[in-house]
Amino acid sequence: MSGQDHNATSSERLRERYRRYVHERGASNWMNYLEALRRARRLVTIDHVHCDGESLFRRRFRCDTRLCAPGKNPLTGEAWRASGEKSCCAELVVDLTPDEIAALRRHWPVIVEYLAEKNWWFRGRELDECLDLDADFEVSLKKRGKRCVFALRDPRWGIRCGIHAACLERGLPLREVKPVTCDTFPLLVIDLPGGEFFLGAYDNDVNALVDLDDDDVGNFPCLKGRGRGPRMYESMGGTIRSFFGDAFYERLCKAAEDYLAGPRPRKVEHPGVPA
Ligand code: SF4
Ligand code: SF4
Image 1 (cartoon, rainbow, N blue to C red):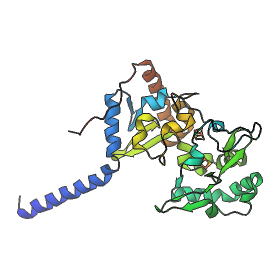
Image 2 (image 1 turned 135 degrees about the vertical axis):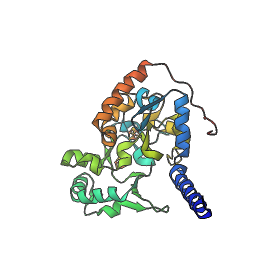
Image 3 (image 1 turned 30 degrees about the horizontal axis):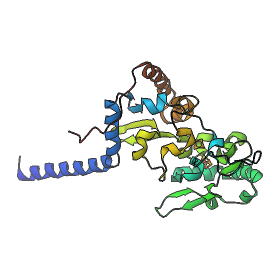
Image 4 (image 1 turned 60 degrees about the vertical axis):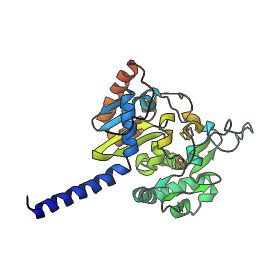
């Protein structure tokens, strides 16, 4: 090999090293976590998707906004929340991508007409008046009255998502319009290097990896303890289908049955420094 060839090879190797750095840096903690789940025997891999058996298959989940709504129940005069409970629609910041903003803008005339019937504040409002420009250069949903601007007060349920309700009642395509973060919570869909994904849900084991705006997973009533209602993958079936398709979801259901029939996993522990 000539000196020139050698230099070209080493500079290509260097570029590859830096490219890998860019791809892996943001996901290295998730790759270590995946290895920890694999060792704990709670990782189920379907095609290119690595699923957490505990948070997805064993955990139960039901969204019940009566447990987390800020304010008081007008019928009883009692606070909706039992204590310091948190609500994803009140405490969390929902950042939007340009694509999500464009979808809201496209359907805004129908959405705002619906919202204005529920709350006078929306009369004549533009979408941009419902968005915040954050210091970290994100665009997010505005907060109003200590909750998301679209979280409508509801005498029966405490709060109700105005975008979700507008989609259902005015025939808009829910999964094209509702912000993906909102549709996805409390699932975790993490993009990994090499076209792979992690699919799980918020639980205590994942607490240190996720950004819940300084809140703890256990502060959300629907994520406390082992949860109530259907299994997480059943409750969130529509969202999982949207991400990965119907065929994947059918295989996931079968994998869940097998997982739940198997032995309990071990404790999740840091796998150590990769070899
Ligand atoms: S997902 Fe949980 S925190 Fe969010 S609105 Fe439903 S019950 Fe409340
Ligand atoms: S858009 Fe709807 S689901 Fe999302 S934070 Fe606002 S009220 Fe909650």
